[in-house]
Image (cartoon, rainbow, N blue to C red; front, side, top):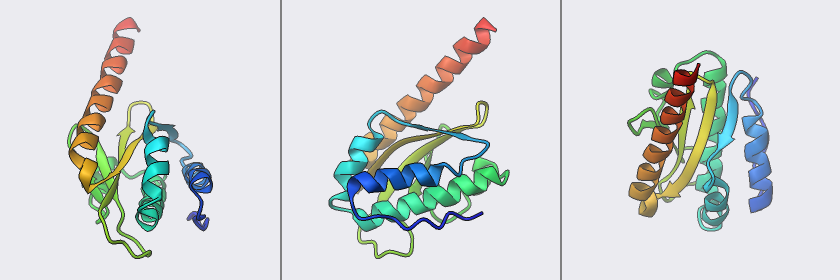
Length: 151
C-alpha cells in the first residue's frame, strides 16, 4: 500500500522518515551513497519543503518499482528525470510549497535489485552532483563486471 507517514520537522527525524519510506522497497534493497545523509542534513536546513517533497516522490518511485515498473517507465512520471548512464533524478514537485529546484539522485540497479540513493542537491550543486552520480554508477557497473568475470 501507499506510505502515509507524515514527514517530521527535524533533520534527524527526516532521515528516520527516509528509512521508513524506503522500507517499502520490498523486492528491492536500499543503499545510500556515502555523502547522501550529510548532504541531506545540510540541505534541509534551507530547503525543508523541497527535501520532504523529494523524499515523498522517492516513496512513489519505490512503490512503482515494487509494483513491477521498469525504471524507464517510471521516468515518464513528471517528477523523474533521466540523468543518463542509468541514473535518475527525483525532483521536489509536490504538495508542499517549493521555491527552489532540488533533485534526489538514484540508480536503480536492475541486475541486483538495489535502489541506490546516491545524492541530493539544489541547482547550485547540480553539475557536481550529476558527475558524482555518474562516477558512482560506473563504479557499481565495474564491480558487477568484475564479479561476473569471477563467476
